[in-house]
Length: 287
Image (tube, rainbow, N blue to C red; front, side, top):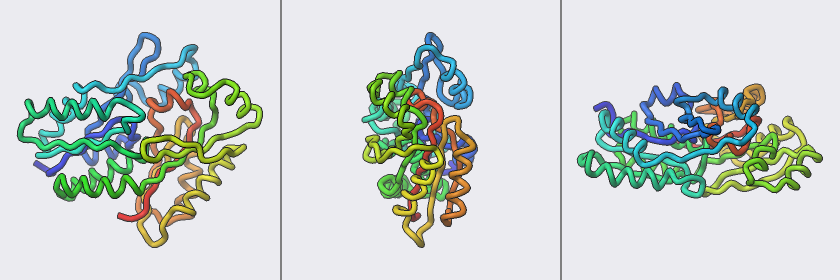
């Protein structure tokens, strides 16, 4: 076996396909439902295809978290190349995936009796979770044990910052998550909300008036939180907004000394609620 540990995570982690393949990460897809059609995130539909459909949809799509079976399938595949497995899922506050992963872990005691499996509920989300999963995969590739990988994941997870800006509240209103009055006010005032995710909860940070202003504010937040002299790991995510994401990536690259920096697409599973135009950054300092 190549590694002692294999990494499993879900598609909300926004890990770029190239890195999924490079590190042999097993991805468990969530379902996106448009009317009577069900698409597996990242399998049957790409982010670009999803946002094209979303803009045309008369009725908002819905999502369905993975059942235990897809996790058990991922564990079975992962067990073919490692003697132990670490599964990192989105927070139980956002989805039932953590519980499904735990149920699958118990089921695996019958089918994979010699494989040690641990499931961790990630305190961050989206590409923040992606950075955690990638760090875990790199530690696994370096031959670390399950205990060592888990310790690293817990350390990194609590250092990851995730900040993002929404282009519109329209889709949150359509999904019933924000009152229409709030969306109307934000539309009239041209507000672009900035939010963060910590401890499994999304929280508003501030509002800005323009997209360039939002990018500037995200950079200001990074200036306050990046620890000088420590390696900086950063990832920019976007929902059908590559130009703005590229601008943010380029500004981060010129302003900070990054050990790791890449752009990835915001998972359609979350894009169902936020709509296109999301741009965000996740980062942490240190090894």
